[in-house]
Length: 296
Image (tube, rainbow, N blue to C red; front, side):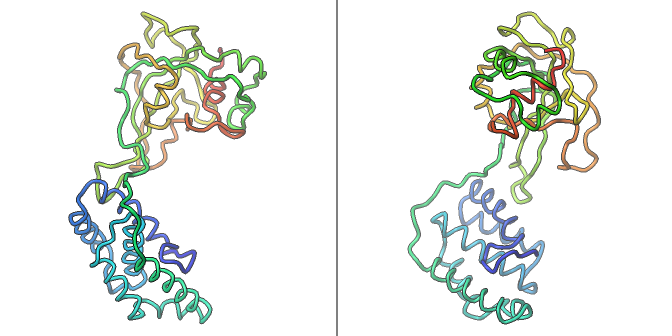
């Protein structure tokens, strides 16, 4: 376990388990969630590993208290471990200064979990849990370039364009075809919950309005310089597509796709990352997309 502070959540195990707590309490009633969490954790370590066990019990109590769902059993288990000095010998090995920091952190934690809890808070994983569109779907989306700056780091290096030319594309449409879905993270405790990213094939064409009676075979492919492919991945959220007044133009066969990563959940380097929810001096989705469109 890597620790970066003396606090009960200042370690890798607590950070990793927080995601699993979120998924478990989102999917199951509290009692069932606790049972599944306990079984999952005991499949990795138990009380014979004081460092990891403290990270588990304390981070669970911290999570539940902050969400307004801390049970007396979980609170009592955490308090008993604090009172007994469980795991403190490991901090003593790092010297008296670190030991006192840990003791001070545990006293603050004791005060926290014995104080009244706030109202029950909504628990939902901060991931894109659903796939959007169907593989093969051809989609038109509207560009939004008004008031933006083209010269972002991840666009200007790929293609030179004046600000005037960039902004002239505002309100015009580009075409994408859903290629596949990439799962960047998946809960070990609740496998049906994962962070989904939609991957699209970008075409090198701009239209004043969504075109009718067009097929992917009629369109040249764009190309992202860093990958050499026409594919990009973005947030699997319909919010951004509705904002860009998307239109579904039909479903069509795709050309053979490049082979996926050999290791599951490894970064998919076939696709450029484009974030529709971000626009700043480093990243802008419209700048990135237009930079990959050589003929636009």
